[in-house]
Length: 391
Length: 54
Image (cartoon, rainbow over the protein chains, first blue to last red):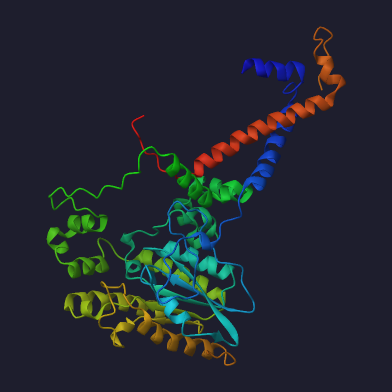
């Protein structure tokens, strides 16, 4: 190495003067940009994400990440002025495997106000409030014509964590700093590494396409592997009730004892009622989301995640569900923007929803709920603009 | 640029031909860029490491 340096300095005059250092640094920067731009495959798109196809098929575009190591964030396509684009925001209750609530709606509406309906679904598994704030921000930035949001019971209590998709800290790095109210959360949650990643993604296309490169690298490493990658081992059952295999059960056991996890209705009800302190942070971020939606100036329909009527038949579960509904009703009471409509009541109480669920909130058939939502959404959209009609 | 030292005959080479110095600087910049990109790609890669007993 020292010989190479000696040749460079003695024979070629590199690094003999400060300007030479600067020129080398400038060349390194330029080469980095040029090489990465030439080598990088095309930038990531929502179609890269392997969401399960809907059954029955729909044309909903699923724009959320499916991996926590995908730092591209929500990737809605460019807004098309000739279409009526709806941003549908939510968690697994919106889309799980082949069952899709936006898909059920999309299959029932062709046009809104003469424009073909397009639905971009901003769904991730188990989102939290800050994750959804980022989804709202992206949807508004992409000029969504209307927004629909499923309100998750998990958001009512803050102890379930404020965000679950930490990779969105990179894709929407500056969001929490945009308003003074959330700036301190931004300082707490955004690390210098997130900002450095964001900058390097913006500057270096090879870094921006990391999700695609990772896929290729995975395939290549599989090809080169001498032995098959072993499956992730299932969590070991220790037999000790204080050491359950999943985190939520662990915290319930810590807070209330193991008897609360024996029955699934009781376990989920306990989670809905919350573990630990109050819901001030949850309300804070809901207000931040509503504030952002208020600025969007488009029709917004927010509905409480619907519950399985079988679960609601359990009086204790029903009481927990009513507590959640009361929370959303209190949020709705404080919203005075006529463009924002909040349905705090679980709509499964008002239509025949028996047999549609596989558990408390996830459905095996979203079609009947789709019909209910079509009626509500078309009513709201046509009320917003009398020239619009749903066909 | 620094004044040429008559006791360092090699210096005359690049003083007389600054283009060679610039080409060498560009080549060094290229090497650094390749290293940087290697680090960047490795940093964002999430290929799982599986110990294969080798």
